[in-house]
Length: 449
Image (cartoon, rainbow, N blue to C red; front, side, top):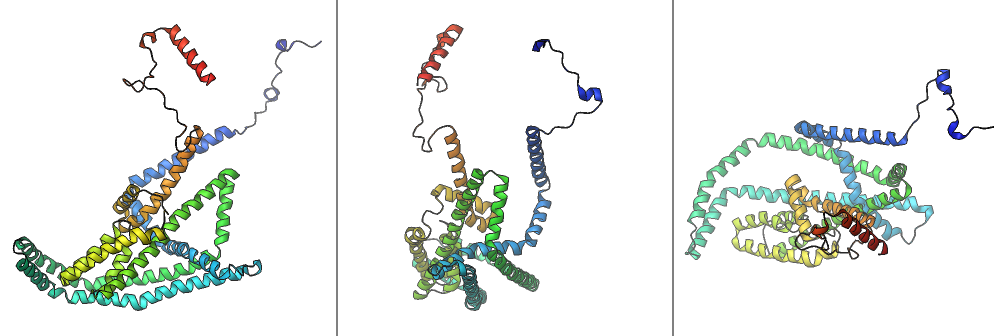
């Protein structure tokens, strides 16, 4: 007869009686906790090392970036040339697309894109750079007579407008002139080492750019394999649904960033060409040099056209105040055309940012990374805002709230204290029975609701 279960004696431990040790059993929960602890400790240690040795880390990081500069430039070249390759492939081979000749079509599109880019660079180096150098040398040659020109124009303005006191301006120029001459003489003294260093730097950059073009060819030819490898890594790290969301988010961020960069570059190129043509029609001096400055600085939103107008305005103001006034009117009209017609046509709403966010991105980017930061700050902030919107949308979804907060129920609030409900009775606060009855009533109301 079997004994009841609660009266049975526990069986002797066979492992203890045999003297054998219990085997180690893995526990996924504790293993995950240990992994998170080690990862957090490693990240904190890296951050501490960066902060504690900031100067050394800057030097070390700059040396690594200089070593990897051909690969970084190659990635940028491939990133910018990829839309051109896709556009050429779509225009030339979309109607004759065949799986049999797919590789040949991609090769021809890639070859034609590189021919266009290299031809454009050769055209700039052949025709544009010499004229820019000539304009700069002419400005240097005329620097000796700039003082006489400035003083002559100031005297003419003083005669024309006698009510305005130009004495302070004339005294400031007279006091600043000796310092400017000494600075120019110091620069001329060190011109030989500067030319040597600049020459070595230019040679190094030419080698890096040639190497970068070669590497970018390999990147473009193996683009699909690289993307497939990245997808394999993402699907290996996450489950299928999360991996799809990660890949979709990366595509959207790339679309926002690339559309803004490429669109703004095309917009600035068109603005520079229009500025050059109009300056030639109006017979303004140094048209090519000033137009290139205007086109490059136009990459900076809002403030770019005005930043680019300052050097040209100063140059033309020294030569002829009339030309400077014409150029100022031209820049204002050009900026209005770009902001109201050309920019929206090319860019559209590529970033989705409000003006306050764009100004914030320009300010922070300029303070941290200078002119490059002012340009790249806008697409970076656009990507961050896009990611934060998705995170907040998911958090609202977890709370069963709509993204526009249309289903939010606003409770009745006591106007005397917004943290106390309106139906709160202070006389019953110390009565436990009343408090329990109130809680039961509220819970029943919630259940019925």
